Image (tube, rainbow, N blue to C red; front, side, top):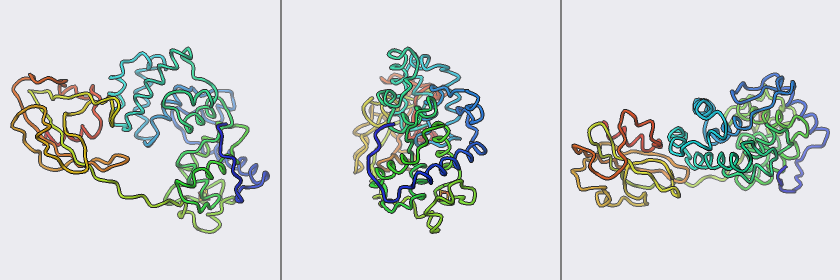
Length: 362
Ligand code: SF4
């Protein structure tokens, strides 16, 4: 198990309570486990069926910041196109990024491809089978390493994501607000983690957070941990987790230029290092705190028309307001990557650029 901060909390349960909690949660999971395409159900695990680390890894990377219904078609498409991690490693990165388009957080797609390369080249195409070794792979952090090690190799790790934080904060009625409370939450979660059936326990906890102990209306009557839950006893479930109020997102401004020639548009590849790195996009201005003179950044001198309506897109750290300009030339003579509109899905166009294209077509 990765090093969970060794702090003692006065709220920690006794060993007897912890055993009862594990037993209650696993019994609930045996009856109520979600059917997910990458999951081995508890009855099948009991028969010795093992989870496929490649399939679980793909799902976990896709599910970061994305819902199950949104991620599932992507997961199916990736597995059909790249049935093994080595197939993914050998794929052209542009194809991987194009298939990822629409899932957001594009650094994940670059790291996915990089990680597949390391597994294919340095591990003979097999995932390392411990949390410590998984942590050394690109794009695999604490949560993913703990999850893969538990689900695929039954290592007794401490799986803590946003859902688990919510459950634990309610069970212990933790008044320390997030993000400061993260250390204590991890330590409290670690006190409960199951030494046996570690994979089932981790998935049960994630299911509990996703389906029962939901943010706004927890279904405490259906919860296997109801009798162990301090927030339920006090009737204060939705007060947790406590959070330090977030500052409002800063606004950034920018402009993009959609140049058309017949049935094609001109794209450029974004720098690997920056936001939306490696993805395709329209040429444009930098995104800054104040609107600048956009036409000074136009890719060529044309009669640029400002499209009606401002494009808004929320990134994790800022709220973007983008002006979209369009122009048409008779033939694709300008230097750039000319993408036929009929074939635009083959290009790794992130959602914000797809919105710009749509606005330019109105
Ligand atoms: S009893 Fe309610 S608040 Fe407590 S863990 Fe269960 S669902 Fe969440």
